[in-house]
Length: 258
Length: 258
DNA sequence: CGACACCTTGAAGAGGTTCAAGAAATGTGG
DNA sequence: CCACATTTCTTGAACCTCTTCAAGGTGTCG
View (cartoon, rainbow over the protein chains, first blue to last red):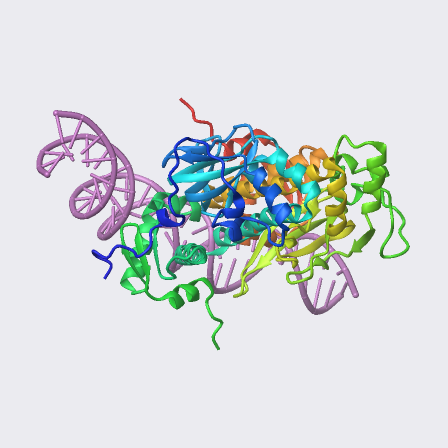
C-alpha cells in the first residue's frame, strides 16, 4: 500500500540544500556533486579549473515561474542543480505542447542557439537552482578545451536522439504504451540520480503528462487507473510505485512470441 | 488540371548533375552552389579554403539504399548535395518511425555523435550525392575557426527546434492539420531552393508520409482526397499542386475569430 | 506484358476525446 | 487552525476520428 507511506526519497533532496543568501551565487563545478552528470570526463585539473570559471552564476527559480520564455534573448545554457522543469512550446493558435521534462544534472536552453532567441518556455515545476553557462564563453573555452567541445556536441546530439524517441512514442504508440514508456524513462533517470527504481513522485500534473504524451488528461488518468487495476503500479495522487516493472517493459516492447 | 502537366521543376535538377566517374570524389565547397545553404557565413577566403579541405569526399547513394544504418560506427556528418533522404528509427518490436525527410543543403548524421554509433537509418529516396564531413576534422577545425564552430552549433540547435515542431504536430494536431503542415513545410523548403511555391513532387510513399505524421497510409490518402474535393490541392500520384495555400495555412493555424 | 509496388475507397470497429459531474487535495485568508 | 476557494484528479457516457480489413485500381519496371 502506498497510503500513508511517504516515498523514501524526495526530489527536493537530490542535492543537499546549500544555504543561499542572494539570487545569483558563484560556485565551483569541480566540487559540485552533479559533476559526473553534467561535466565532461577526462579533463585535467587545469582544464577543470577553467571550466569552473565558465559557470558564471547560479540562479534560483521558484516553482511555477520561468527560467526563460519563448522569444527571450538567448545568452546561456542552464545546468539544473536542483529542481525539475518542463519545456513547452505554444503554437500561434494557443495549442500547447510539453517538449520535455528536465531534472538535476540535465541542461536546458539548447533551442535558443540557432536564432539567438529561445523558442520554448522553461518552467520550474518545483523550486529550482540552476547554473548559468554563458554560451559565448562555452564557445570560447571549447576552442581551447577539446573535451569540452566534444561534451557540448554530445549533449546536443543526445537531445536529438531523445526527441527521436519521443517521435516514435507519439507517432506509433497507444496510450498505455506511452504512459508505460514515460514512467520507465522517468524512473530510470531518477534511479541514475540515486533514487528508488520503483517509486517516484510526479512533479507534473496529469495535464502536463498528457501534453507531453499527446493525450488528454482524462486519458492519462484512466490509463493510470487501468495500470492500478492490473496491479502494475500503485498510484496515490502524484506518488507512484511501480509494482511490476516487467509488465511495463512488455507494454513498451511487446515480445514477438511464437 | 495536373494531368499531363509535368511539374516545371524536378528535384533531380536541384544541382546540375556533375559527371562523376568514381564513387568518392573530391570537390570544393567554395564553388558548391549550395554554399549559402550549408556553409557558415562570414568566413574569410583563407578560412573558406580550410573548410574546403574538410570535405574529404563525396559519395553516391542509389535510391533505396542507405547512407548509414542504425548501429553503424559514426565517423562523419553528411551534407546532401543532390537527392532526397528519409531518416527512420525502428523500435525493438519492429515499429518504424520516419523522423525526417532531408533534401539538398541539409545535413544528416547528427544522431551519431552522442554514442559514436548511428541510432537511425538514412535511406535515399532518390539517387543522391553527399559530401562527407569527417567529424573529428570538424571538431579540429572548429577550434580554429569560430564561425565554423558556431555553424555546427546552429545546425544542431535547428534540428532540436525542428523536432519540437514535429512533437507539436504529433501531439496535438488532427490528420488534416498534420498533412497541411507537412505540405507547407515541404514546399517552403523547396521554394528556398528555387522551386515552385505551389507545385511539388513527393519523393516518398503515402506510407512514409504516414509514418512521419503518425498516421496510417489510408488516412494520408483519404486526407489528400479530401483536400482535392475541397479544391485546396490537385493531386496526381506524387505530383501535388497547391491551389489554395491560405486554406492550408488556416488549417494549421485556425484563426481565433471573434 | 506481366508482376509488383503503390494508391484509393468503402465499411466496420477501436481507441481516444469531449462533456459533465463529483471527489480529493492544496492553498489562502481570516 | 479552520473554512472556503481553487486546482487537480477520477469516472461515466456519448461521440468522433482514425484504424483495420478488404477489394480493386493505377502506375512502374524488368
